[in-house]
Length: 132
Image 1: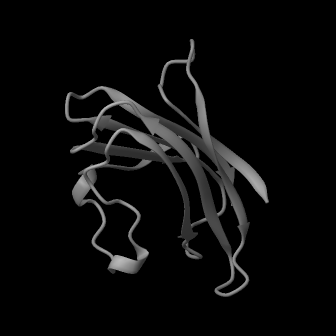
Image 2: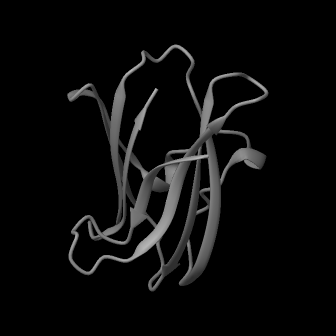
């Protein structure tokens, strides 16, 4: 496993709390690599809606940027889903695996992700950097 990123409760460095980690590991079934994110979070208030933002750069240049309504961003089969809104106040833990496409060119990638609630307050912020 190679550690590539961390997840916090804020994008600001001062006083933020660590919530999780992302690692790269070999994908023995399909070849290449897979990212695996481990996340533990406690919601103080109900999370009924929000937005998820993702930006990725490659070799120092912007590669991809998008945003989704958090509660609507997964359209996979029920058994593969991990987002089930609303989230009531309480503690939640997830392990999320994502295949890194084999066709991506070799080089350095940086990613930033953040989740805001319906009031546009940042409740999760993640940073990752890895070399393929």
